[in-house]
Image (cartoon, rainbow, N blue to C red; front, side, top):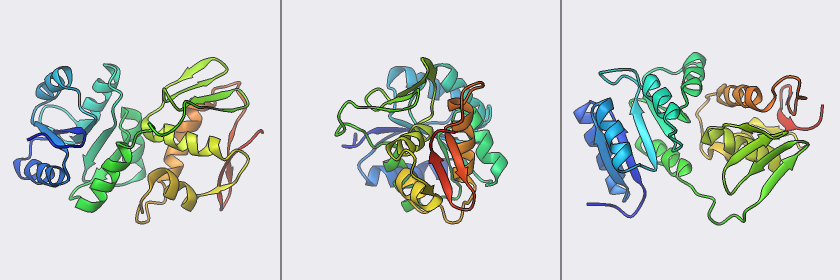
Length: 228
């Protein structure tokens, strides 16, 4: 039965895990479907695009990272969350490079997973069509697009949320705790490097030579969007 909340596609080939995930989401009113093969996931995307996709990093035919790259190359824009059993800085960087918006440690905690999904499925429908700007950097909240000096910047959903928070507080030093609370919206339980990882990749996209640096590190405190 279709729920009242958005459609979530699960891409994994573990029956017990898929049954548990489906149960958790159905209990909350989400509409859930499962693809156990990559080809099935692609077919479902074409026939009925989901609002969010959760991908097992170790699917049988290929890795979840490869599927993320394929989906992004094909133009998929919905949030992509990876289920993974490892948690270190290199894993986080690999997720971002593949186009995933975030990752979830398995075995997962049901409440944490639901909070994360709810966060990614939030919409900006209540916000007016507003353009945030700082120097030559522009962020369109209506179309969720970014430009700098006329150059289009492709952002993942989490990169967009992070840049939006920075641009809503220009020249204000934001602590790591403030960023976690306002961008992620939940406790990362000591995952101290997650902000650094996202800041690093946001800088690579926003600050292309010879453009001036706009996102600065305040050592021991946090980050600030300001002129050099």
